Length: 245
Image (cartoon, rainbow, N blue to C red; front, side, top):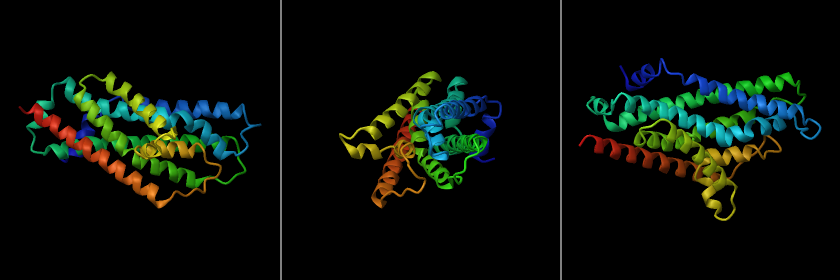
């Protein structure tokens, strides 16, 4: 049995589906109600609806969901004192870390698909005349791919902090920090560190779904994300090695 299958089996009785279902639903419901009450101002149909449903979701709810998923995945090991047992398995530390991160990332991706489905249903309810913004959905999926950096950060925090609630609370601070770094203009380069936060802000400022970013910005996104992931994996390995002593 592969590590990924083992990690999935550990979550079969989990109640992770609750936040993964409720947070996107609340975001779309709130944003749709707000859009319905301000259609005289918000006249760009699909794009305007997007700014309402994604404003808080992309910057706060989404990072919080990542924190919940990662915290739950590691909390099971802490709660039953399974860390020592985990370290005696035949798998390497790197394999164990990546298995947990990939399971968390897969759940995050599924929640994003669900969110996009809710957004689409809401838009069809309003009977928009504007064509469906497929490119906007593509931007969202790209932002989700870059959220692997947030998953890596939260995986480390959830490993070193044995309680469930603190890593979740820290995920909100990480989301807020990413938003502040992206919004500030004092040191513009810092806005590229968390690509998912940068893209979330850009998507909320779009006047059209047809947007392009310069190659050097994409390169920065990839490099910073890769550095964050590698650093997180290294720190998690070091922490687990300390548990073996």
